[in-house]
Length: 96
Picture 1 (spheres, helix red, strand yellow):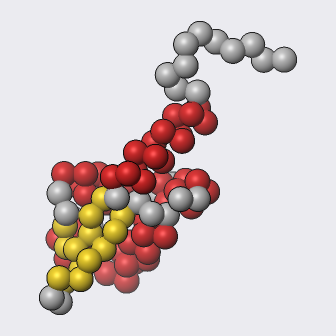
Picture 2 (spheres, helix red, strand yellow):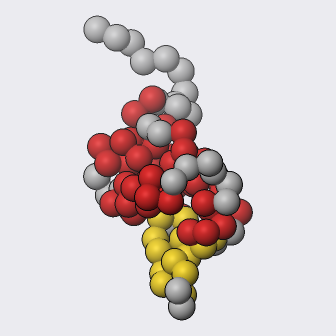
Picture 3 (cartoon, helix red, strand yellow):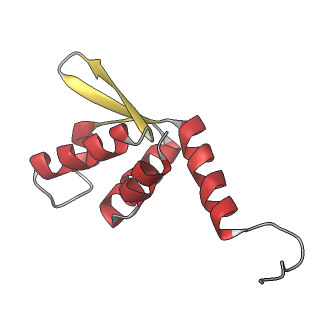
C-alpha cells in the first residue's frame, strides 16, 4: 500500500462515502450507484482509485461487480494517518 495513493483516494468526499457504505456490508456497483447522483462512469473512476490504493476489492458475481472494504488496508491507512498526525501519543514532543 502506497501511502500517497491512500491519501489521494481519501481526499475525495465521494470516495470517503463509498468507504463508509462498505464498512457496513459488501455492495454491488449498482447498489452503490443508487446512493449517488453521478454517472456510472464517474463512479467507476472512483472505484478504480480506491482499488488502486488497496482500500477496496472487487469480485465479479454473474453480471454484477461486488465491492468489499479491504479491512486490513483500511486499518493500516488509518494507523498511518494517526501516526503522521501523532494522534494517541502521550505528552507533547518538544520542537527544536
